[in-house]
Length: 299
Image (cartoon, rainbow, N blue to C red; front, side, top):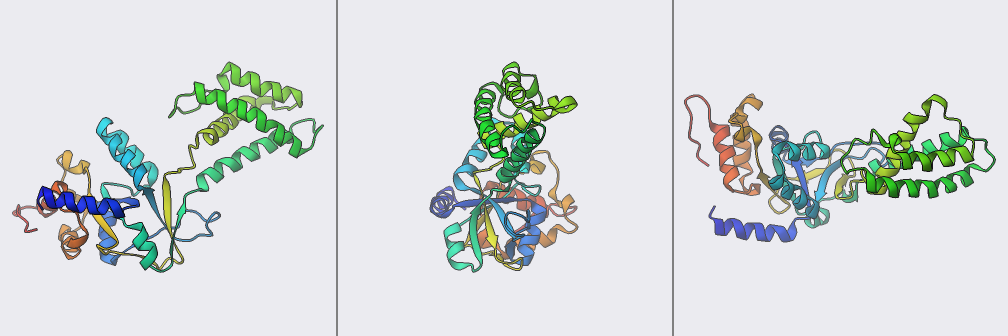
C-alpha cells in the first residue's frame, strides 16, 4: 500500500475508532480461527460474571503509544502487561459506535472493580480502627471524622510520595505519623504490634484513592449478554495492526510460537481486508513465512 493510501485509510479510521484492544500473535490465531473476538470473565461480583472485552479509550491509547517513543521497550511492555496478561503487539482498532449499533447483546461500560476493591479495603481498615477504639462515638461518626483525617493524609502524601513508588515507607513519614497518631490517640485506638503494617496499608489505600491508581479511568469494556456472543471479524467493525514486535527486533523468529506458522498465514490471508498493510505488516508476514528452504511469501 502506498503512503498516500495508508494515510487516507488512517484518516478515515481515526474518525471511527473509539476503543482499542491489545492482544498477541498466539491469541490472534484463535480470534481469526473463530471469526469473532470473544470476551473473558474478568471478575464476578461487580458485573455478575458477564463476558467482557477489555479496551482502552482512543485518547488513552494515544498516550500509551506516545510513551513508547520516549521510554524503553521494557517500560512500554510493562504498561501493556498491566492492561492484560495477553496484551501484546497486535492492536485491534474497534469502531465502537458501529459495533454497538449492529452487534446484538453488546454494551460499553467503564472498568470499576479496581476502584471498588481499593475503596472496600479502605472502609474495612477504618472499621478495624473503630473496633480497636474506645467506641465513645458511633461507627458512622468515627468514619466521618476519619474522612477529614484521610483527606489531610491524602493531600500530604500526594505531594511527598513520587508517582510509581512502592509506597512501602509511608509509615516512616513524620508528618503522616503525626496526623495518623493524633487521631488514634484521640480515640484510644490500640494497634499494638500491628501499627506500622496497618498504617502503611491504610496510607496506601488513601493515596491510591486520591490519585485514582486503580480506577483505570481510561479503560472501558465491551460487555456481552452471554459468553457465546462476540464481535465478528469484519472490516466494517475494526482494523487489525501489528505494532513494534520485539521478537523481530531481537532477531527471533515468530515461527517458534506456532506449531505450524502456515495456519496463521492462511488465516491472515483469509481475513486480509481487516489488516492494515503498513511496514510492520510485511515484516511480520515475511517472518512468519521464513522457514528452512523458504524465504519468500506472496502477500
